[in-house]
Length: 254
Image (cartoon, rainbow, N blue to C red):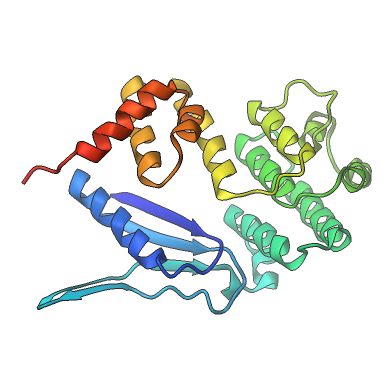
């Protein structure tokens, strides 16, 4: 079974078509069962993608997919949940609720992280640590408020976990910590492209050249520039241009 997860942050009239496109590409290549789900992270009630429908002179199809909507979640229920994903959803909801209001975001972030620390004594667990970083990164705060938050939470954080709030003195933080820290210092908000870069950088470390080329081809099909793809998958410009040319001339087998 294949699981296709698509994260969408705003309403897009072509979203359902994109979901179907990914579905038939997966099915055509692997011929396996596919579970598709769209995670709609905005709080807009109007973001309600409909099934993809196609009809042309008697040829018809309808493609439905599962959805998970942040705007339908109940905050008190999320707070009581023991599912780790619940706290990630809470962080996403708070991101929208505190847009352009950093002082309000400071308060909800402090409460969220404090509760997280108290309910996760083993913060050195790779899963707890990754989730902690996700919350901290997503709910971006200016430098001064970050310093204040570190001070406020210091009594709740064990010594070995202090690096989680971007302490420059701790060297044993995970590799991605420096990436997160750089992004925050530059004031860059989280986005699909940054998240994609981060995942690719982590995933291709052990990848083979063939996997890199396949990934480059998919990114080119999605509209990324040759220069951007070369940087993301760590191939030369000539190699990516060669892949781009092969895409244009490729024709599926009949």
